[in-house]
Length: 459
Ligand code: ADP
Ligand code: MG
Image (cartoon, rainbow, N blue to C red; front, side, top):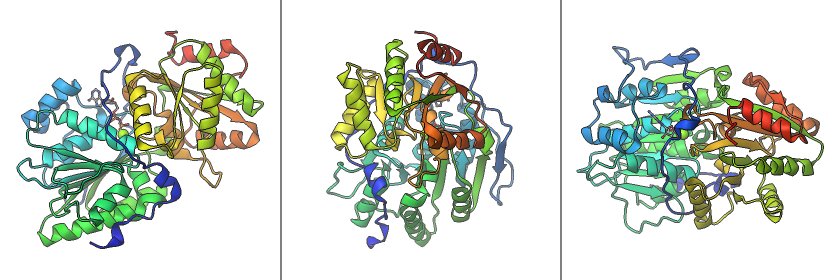
């Protein structure tokens, strides 16, 4: 292997991928917050099977009918405490698990249970007798890699002999990695492959979580080079490698690109308009000044304990500023940005997962994948935008999707200042046809009422 696997990560991307260790999360759903049902209408799903599929897949009503190993069923029922597959699990698990283990490009809403699909795929394929890397899962941030590793270890609790490696900065492997399932971030994965610490010959399955992100500008070169390298190695042995791509969002461009690169694949896509997140009540809060944004947030705090809150800001500077502003006035909160030391990042995340901290200020380093089921409120302190100033459509869905996990209720407040933010938010909500109610920024009763409307009245 040459240096070809070194990804050309933009600066922004490197920010999102610093160092650290694993964090544990108790994963008990809170039934009190669970809404009637997960909105999983099959309408609007666009399914296309690979050309060589002879008989269509049968969607799975139960985990038992999937032909999973007993040890995995025990992990699902006894550790995860899942009863039956969610819609996306019912649809994609047969595609993932049935030989010949075809490639899959799948899209499903935030919080709909995608992790379980690829985790079961990896755990099923990995042969515990073979002490070599066999499944890779690549995630855009260290937090997501750590979370996915945690879920994999939990579901694999009874898979004797299967071992795991976290491949993120700060985890050092002086010897070659002999674990079967490797989960990590692109920068460190590339580095380890280049230094021949990961043998690609036995890789039977590669997963891209947040796949659209993994195939977009910052990570594209890395992802494609890695897939090519693996295919080359596998072809030499006359073997194939299953590629599994999951995300809640795929822009037109990335979708076309994914389809052109991942051939012989089953596809599941949603129409953009079906991505609107009905169970999460979303509001627009026009404010007259920057200071008013902080005022609104303080007002929300003063309403009492709402469950956990994530406040998204555009830049590290605003994160720091808002954090100190709130802390100075005695409001307990914490913050995470891509430039923090890995250990610090891990500590902050762990405290939030454990519920010691209730409010997290975050840049978009946390906008994707992060799964804490008590998050009932997302505040967009700034409307998400690309560096160009264009609205960041997908990022909006991901940020808001940090609440309302697996059919729970949630609310999102969008604080908008001036015409620019207004137009940006308007473009996002128009694209996904999201109805937004307005709230008057300086009226506590209006905020209370909005929360009640969202089903969060347990104040
Ligand atoms: P996604 O990746 O689609 O955004 P996750 O995989 O993070 O969503 O799942 C969201 C939450 O739903 C997690 O807390 C997970 O434990 C829970 N979950 C997933 N599948 C099931 C299931 N079949 N039954 C109950 N809860 C589930
Ligand atoms: Mg996910």
